Figure 1: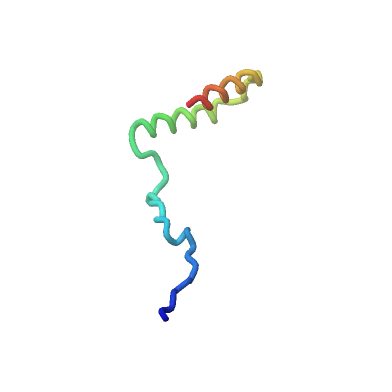
Figure 2: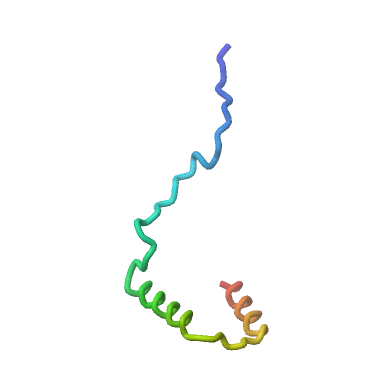
Length: 65
């Protein structure tokens, strides 16, 4: 009678590891432009009040895509 190897496998061992870049900086000119805009926004001063309805509408638009 043959013997079966019933060792359980961890699915995580079967999945390939994601590639991690050497640095996490911008990859191209578009990334650099977006990063510059984000930094400008973060350092622009006090936040302005925004109505909750704006975020509800934004969530609905994002959910459609």
